Image 1 (cartoon, rainbow, N blue to C red):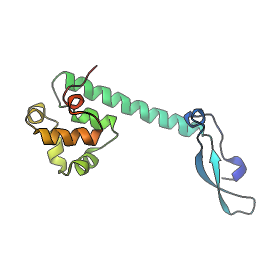
Image 2: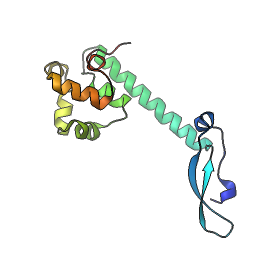
Image 3: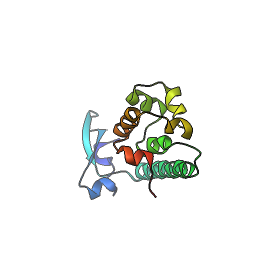
Image 4: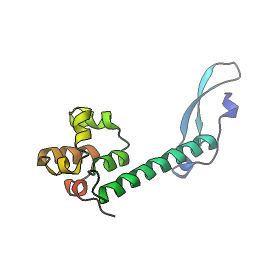
Length: 133
């Protein structure tokens, strides 16, 4: 992309007076950096993915309220973490985290493990053990 063609569409970055760094070519064909306010197709794709994440989080919250899963998958979605990332932060294997998805297993977790989950998700242990509406 040519430096003069770097998109300057309105985005959430614009509202915060922020810019995104892009690489483009100058008139001599050399790579240069340019600041962009945003690019509409990228903004649409990002908003769609954020909506999907929100939808998944609400789904997990509903399953938690029905007693079918522990709150861990819900907080993983809110924190944008997958199983491997959560396991890494917790210092556990993937299968152990997955096992903690079971309400019965979750209720038997030690206070130390609950505190580590809370720290991982940057919430309190009370928030971890009791999701509010």
